[in-house]
Image (cartoon, rainbow, N blue to C red; front, side):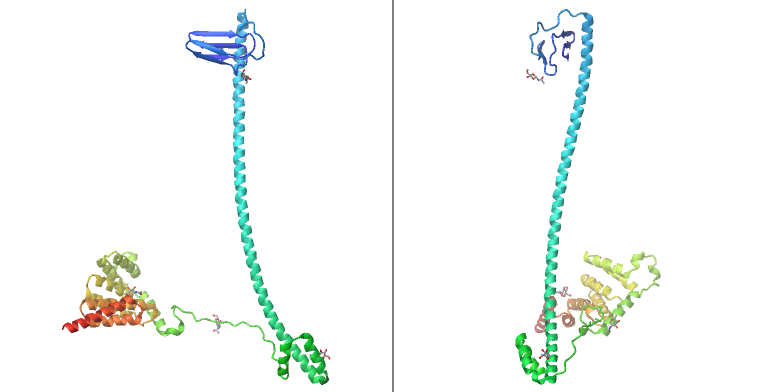
Length: 393
Ligand SMILES: *[C@@H]1O[C@H](CO)[C@@H](O)[C@H](O)[C@H]1NC(C)=O
Ligand SMILES: *[C@@H]1O[C@H](CO)[C@@H](O)[C@H](O)[C@H]1NC(C)=O
Ligand SMILES: *[C@@H]1O[C@H](CO)[C@@H](O)[C@H](O)[C@H]1NC(C)=O
Ligand SMILES: *[C@@H]1O[C@H](CO)[C@@H](O)[C@H](O)[C@H]1NC(C)=O
C-alpha cells in the first residue's frame, strides 16, 4: 500500500483501489496513523486545532481545486522530506561533534592523568636526589669541621706555645698573666703540653700533596708476586708464534674452502662434532687442523679425548703427551689444559692396565689441582686396583 498524507490531503492506493480525501481542516500529519488490514484502512487523525468539523471532507470540491490541492500536497511533502533529511543531517553532525568532543575530553583527562603521574614521579626522584645531596653535604661538612677543628687546634696550640715562649724569654715577670690566660681560655690539656714542649723547635705545618702509584700491567689474573713472569712471557710468546705458523705449502689442501684452512675454525668444528658424539668426524677435523698448524696444544688435547672415546688408547697417550710437551712452560694460564692432558693420558694408561703409569699421571694432575675431588677419587681407585693386583698375584 502506498499512503500519502499532508495537512489537508489524504491518499491511500492499494491497486486496484484508490482512496482520496480533501480534509475539512488541517491535521497533524506527523502524528496521525493509518493501519491497513483485513481489507480495511483504519485512520487515526489528529486535528491541528481543536474544533468541531462539519464533515470529514470538504464537500463540493471542483476538479481544478482538487488538482491544485494535490499538487500543493506533493510539493509540501517534498519540502517536508527535504527538511527532515536536513534536520537529520544536522542532528547527525551534532552527534558526531558531541562524540568527538567527548572523546577529546576523555583523551585530555587521560593525558592529564599521565602528566600528573609523571610529575609525581619526577618530584619523588628530585626529592630523593635532594635528600641524598643534603646527606652528602652533611657528611662533607662534618668531615670539614673535623679537619678544621684538628687543624685549628694544632695551629692555636703552636701559636700559643710561641707566644708563651716569647713572653717567657722576654718578660719573665709576666708569669701571672700567663696563668690568667690559661684560666680564661680553659685549655687544660694545652697547658700541660706547653710546659713540656716549651723549648722544642716548632715544625712547619704539613703541606698537602699527591702521591702517584703505578701498577705493573698484568696479562694473567694472578698476583705478580705469585707468578713467574719470565715463564709466562715465554708461554705467551710461544702461543703467539704458534698462531703464526701455517703450513701454507700443503698443495693438497689448496681446494679447501677459506674457512677450512683456519685451524681455529676446524677446532670449533671438531668440538661440535665431539659434543654430538661424532668422534670420528671430530678426529678428522682435528687431523686437518694439526696439518695446518702442529703447534697448538689444544688440538692434540681435544684429539686425545676423541681417541679415548674411540678406544684408540695408544693414540690418546700419544696426543696427550704431545699436548703436555707443547703446554710448557707450566704457568697458570695453561694449568687447566695440563690437568686435562694428565687425566686423559692417565685414563688411557689405566684402560691399557698400565696402572702405575696411570697413577703417576693422576698424581701429576692432582699436584696441579689439589682441590679436584673427582681426580682425587679416581687416583684412590687406581691405588686400590694396584694393591688388589699385587695381592692377587
Ligand atoms: C500526538 O498526539 C497526541 C495525542 O493526542 C498529542 O497529545 C500529542 O501532542 C501529539 N504529538 C505531536 C508531536 O503532535
Ligand atoms: C704575652 O705578652 C703580651 C703582651 O704583654 C700579652 O698581651 C699576651 O697575652 C701574653 N701572652 C701569653 C701567652 O702570656
Ligand atoms: C708511572 O706511569 C707513567 C705513565 O705510564 C710514567 O710517566 C711514570 O714515569 C711512571 N712512574 C713511575 C714511578 O714508574
Ligand atoms: C676435575 O677434573 C676433571 C678432569 O679434568 C674435570 O672434568 C672436572 O671439571 C674437574 N672438576 C673441578 C671441580 O674442577
